[in-house]
Length: 354
Image (cartoon, rainbow, N blue to C red; front, side, top):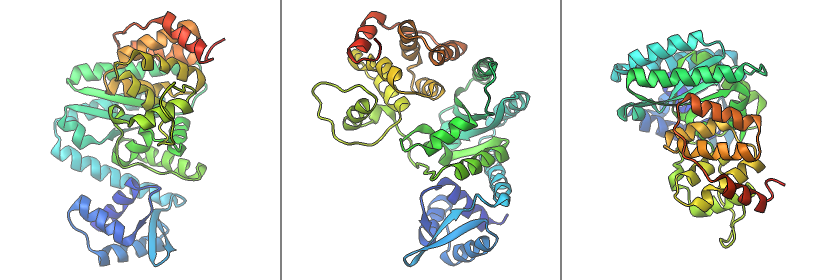
């Protein structure tokens, strides 16, 4: 793969669902790699289009470029791209090599793990942390929880052994696709644009291609959401969406944000009234608890989450809540106890229980 092809694929893979003209693509490549020449990009794009690696479609006077996931050979090229990104990162972050070797060895021995990617590795390395996206095979097997607990315990052990903070999310392929196809702002749509696949990158891009075939649209997001900085207007709007309409604040349409981000934002506040809104939302709206646990670990509120989930499970027990409690305990989370009686009263008030 020559330099121009690498830069084109690298840029387009970070912009899935966000159409770029040749001029915009050239500008993005220049911003990421220091230099880019329109004529070179133009010629290489048309050559890749002839090979069906990318598609070019006319919109007005512009040609819009995108990856052609219908072409089986694209996966091999994206895998080659990932391996190069991995080498370039590790050449600058040699201290990470031992951790990644250990991670890869454990991933290969873990049957349910399909692929593992580092998220925004450059920034996180400077902070002495690593953020991981782990894709798992789909399974209806009753042993899935045991497999997850094993993965969570392994990550806890690695964090201790390598003296580095590890935040990770383990999703099945189906959950991964569901998050990619969501119209809500969520961490997965934000992660993919900064990932580097280090364990089975070909499997990662195979799942991306499968998601592209199943979904009408995939739109990655470039900027990471900080739950602590979600606008009040968006908090109020999404609380109402999830069945918790507050008395007083005027509700106006805002940005649709996933329940896991909104609940994490509430956990980061010191407002007991709003924190007790979380069990109400969870009782009314399906949440991905693994995603919620990841965010609670990342932003330092997992103890509060464990206390709330134990209270919720005492009021309205479900397998999902029980499993989430087991995963948090596998991470040896220290519980911050919640007021179960007050939460139950709040849930009755909002018709979350009978």
